[in-house]
Image 1: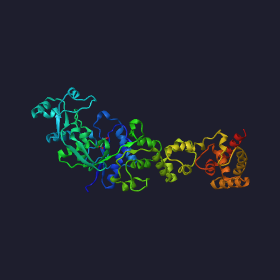
Image 2 (image 1 turned 180 degrees about the vertical axis):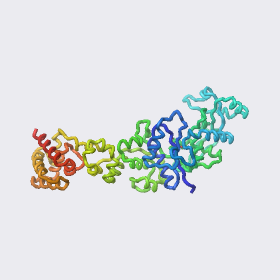
Image 3 (image 1 turned 135 degrees about the horizontal axis):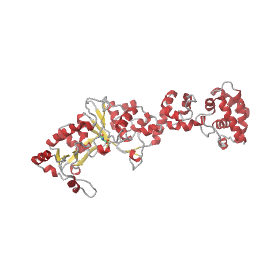
Image 4 (image 1 turned 135 degrees about the vertical axis):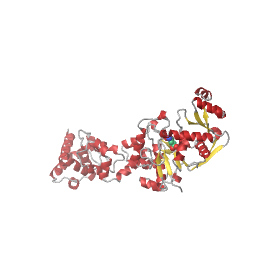
Length: 479
Ligand code: GLU
């Protein structure tokens, strides 16, 4: 097989949506699996849709998520420039060649004439009027500087067929394809032209993109054929939906990669989850690192049917990644969210990490889960009553003063010593473990649920603060 070359060709329209990132990821995975190159090309010829700053978002997102490109605008390569607006002259040169080959023609029709050709819905079917111009008329118009566009000359009869690796054999009747514009009046190419020229000149072997291009591919093939170029292999990807009838789209307020990172998802889990949106691995294993994805990825596993984006599942996956982190890794990756909590700088973060690791799915849950360590005050004493634990406020009133007494006597105050003290209390008072554990935990946290039990929390708080909180709770009960 010749060296695989794939590309990601986003338009800088303001954000990198999840669908775009998946396209990039699949191109990357496929290229890397086969020892090939993955190229980034910026398609900015639609100046009206250009949004300042979006190219940087593309660079940053790809780098941050580990989708490393081998060639691209900011790193160069042998097939540049990699920004279409910098390739303007190349397109014009090839458009003129295509005219000579009969695959395109100059169109000098004024906008007013074009208007008259539109149907009630505003759709245009160009009538090939300018195709009939003589060589002399064309020359004359060009000399006079009459504004023009260059249109594709699509046959009026016949069908264009090709094989897509995901969707199989695709045929489109040429009568359903219009003579679309290849070069606009400002000299800029349209996507419909530029994608063909660039994919060929950049040696792209496999074109991986969304299904929206499935039915326009026959018109690109007409151009490949007219130039005598080999067509690339096509892989169109199923849409990503947020439910049965709505596509996932940033425009409708759906989150992007960046948004998910800001929400506290583990980065690797986002990429891992996106990989599964439209591709099924051969095994049932779902948690996969980028290198495992490269190893396992195969085009045969890409599904035809739309993928439904399930944030709950991505959250679960994020939690799986968190569980497997070492404490120090957790502290490093969760840094931003730990800083947002009230415990930052006051507690041993490795201990906090150990406490939280198995209990959260995304980092943004952190502040809420541990702020009680710094925030303690009036709480509802009904929390002492728990049916299943068989505890209530009377038991609390009996247990807490004795727990205080035991804790006060401890010279070293750590998990083990606290545990022994609590177990002694259980025996001496002839209570069930749960009755004592629940009661003390509520007394020192003021919370129904906390990450970690009595021992972990008391150790973190330290002896002094633990005693202070028990006193506070005893007062609260006696009010
Ligand atoms: N610029 C196109 C887009 O953003 C690229 C499509 C393609 O990959 O060919 O949709």
